[in-house]
Image 1 (cartoon, one colour):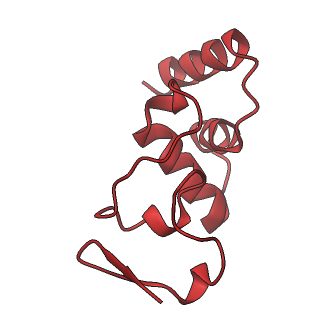
Image 2 (cartoon, one colour):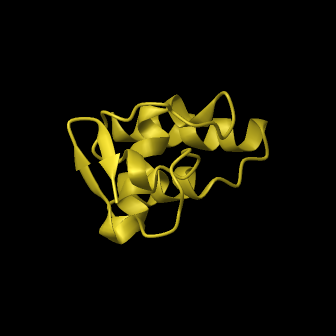
Image 3 (spheres, rainbow, N blue to C red):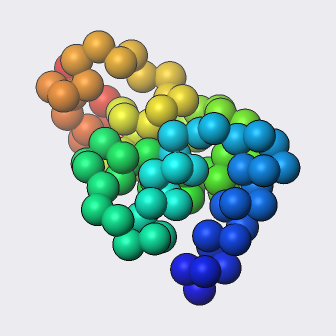
Length: 92
């Protein structure tokens, strides 16, 4: 299954000249490489957003525990490390 996913990622990246850090992180994970926490978030968002087939857009899912770190999210990037996510509400 991982080989199929790698092939799909490569195909999508070539078709759209994709340079997404999420696709790169997901590819590294599927190849068995270790990821930092930040790259793991990028990889998961990429997978959840179907490899960003619609481009880099906000998933608009504040119930996701990773949403505050979503690379295309609407949440401000300032102070992300201090944000608390509680049942879909993001608080400072």
